[in-house]
Length: 320
Ligand SMILES: NC(=O)c1ccc[n+]([C@@H]2O[C@H](COP(=O)([O-])OP(=O)(O)OC[C@H]3O[C@@H](n4cnc5c(N)ncnc54)[C@H](O)[C@@H]3O)[C@@H](O)[C@H]2O)c1
Image (cartoon, rainbow, N blue to C red; front, top):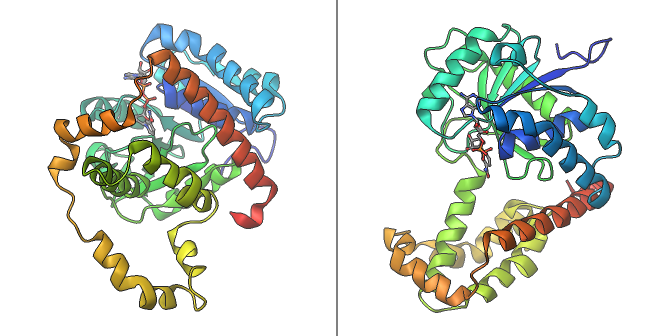
């Protein structure tokens, strides 16, 4: 059982407190969890609590997703070691480097150190859990919980077990992420890129084709998503979208538009779309060369706008 129903607060260990680990800390701390941090890099670990506190403050001011930043920040502790971080944890959210050798090493240590009831989740974007959990004695409690950057603002989390992950672990993980305000979805069997990145990859490849072959400018393509498809997609997915695009729903839509949609999507994705020559064409069309500082400032602006949008959606949960 997850703690928190009696005297003890539930506890999460965040292992790796880079970009994603810090964002996860924000999510759990603001939901009332005790958070213990560990990172192999001492300086990163030492400065993490202050950076997380700042991100909590930012959300109070700009997003309204956090009401009491000081109380949330007060639940965060730096652990002396990985074993100290995971001791007594209900959940470990591993957010170390996306390299298989690192995942194997970290997970061996995690499985040995964590109590048998602790769920071990990895934030990994592309490495499936079977690649680093197969030989672990506690492999049945291991899974991927893949967030989207930045998870303290964007709620989706893709849960994907290895073939040996216990179904009850996926279920408990689902309850945990829901309880802290995230939106978990289950990827029922391992596939590279899980769901979100596979959808994104297809859309990006088509965008590279349309701009690279001169059908539209990069700026106008972006407007097509931001002011067209993306508006609907901010509160409904492609199936609900097409259900509403024909009076008789999805089957009616497919009968009316299926042959056309098939024709439009049947060109194969080729390596050429992602070649340097094509990226040069995209950048020429894009015309902008933002500095790292400008990219950081725009990312901050994006997070603020996303937080406001998430707040709007929370006020109308019937749209979720
Ligand atoms: N950045 C994204 O957009 C994004 C999105 C979703 C998921 N992810 C996934 O989240 C994970 C972390 O990504 P990130 O962008 O935060 O990377 P990052 O490089 O910012 O952070 C990784 C952290 O792990 C630490 N680390 C290295 N070895 C360690 C060890 N043995 N024990 C503990 N900590 C260790 C590093 O010092 C660093 O602070 C990756 O698996 C990545 O694929 C990233």
